[in-house]
Length: 464
Image (cartoon, rainbow, N blue to C red; front, side, top):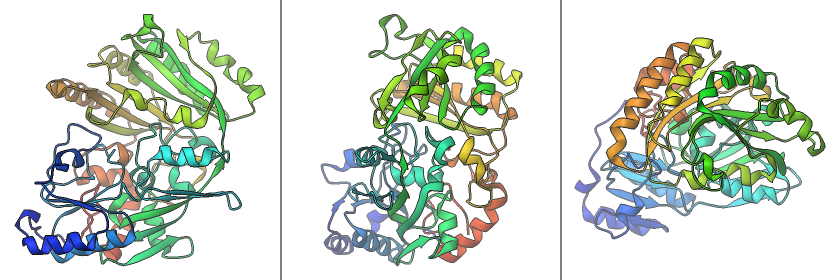
């Protein structure tokens, strides 16, 4: 059940002062000079005004914040890295429980694990593990929050070799809606452990992750670009090539506009299609592995050996926090010629230099897990597709939104039905159900057990 929420501005000032005294971290209110900066999230299109932002520094802060929100019937959102597509780390009028200061890592080389605080970004994990030649599968932007990505699934360069991020979670420490602190793992609270590996932030606030760490240090990879008028030819080659590739080779397909440096000046501002590669196999085999790629004669090839954290942060500079984003996404089983034609047309029509479309392949280790072993219901899908209209200027919001919606409408008939929840905005309950398919009812049962009042509901919501 859901109850009406109280606007935090209506709370007695004494209550708020008592709450501030319970929190070791900073509590930011609308009248504070840091409020406008603190409430910002990655997507500049999201402009919400919470009543209270609690910047927690430890688990006790999180417990106190949860208890305050529940006892006073205040709407609560939870923010880790703030990268969520729909800005669901922040809410209007309510309480934001901000984890960004719970930021630590610990690498255990004996057990090959990395413990990660709930407020970390993936760059923190890459940095910590790299010194030991270890890494955890994640996304492609290092400023992404660990919590949001990990709880939603986690796709990226290491997916075919080491699985999704959720496949590498050993345990989590979390605070539940009743304010209790628990551990979820294969040995403790097994139902909760199943649910958090793909079920998002519906079941509690994860303050600490323990990840399996995998051997990765220097990879061979980088971008290859072709002129956008070659999109049909390149995509038809790519769709067949990548799914037959060795799991040590990964490449996601993109439609893009080439930014400035470090790319060659003649390419600046040019619309192109491309594949961004990562090869984790033996270095001496890299040139042989890349020969069929080079045989496609890319107009630009920036591939070579590099530390894995360099690849995983390659696009950070081009996508800083605060740009306007509009997202649409789908899972894809097949890419028929008719879909290729649509991709080529919308690639030619990219509305702004930051706007893009990515096809992230899902194969190898990610396919070897059952579609009921975790809430991720699309284990048999071959791609996760995301279409994003992006621009720094809010004046272009209509343009980027229209292109994204039109592109999605044209390509959705060729999709598998649902979408990767980390790529979704607020699209309604039917879309959430479609994305969890046969696993949705089990998620509802677990939600009823751990959060029967839907306290954690500012998310891709599992309604109890």
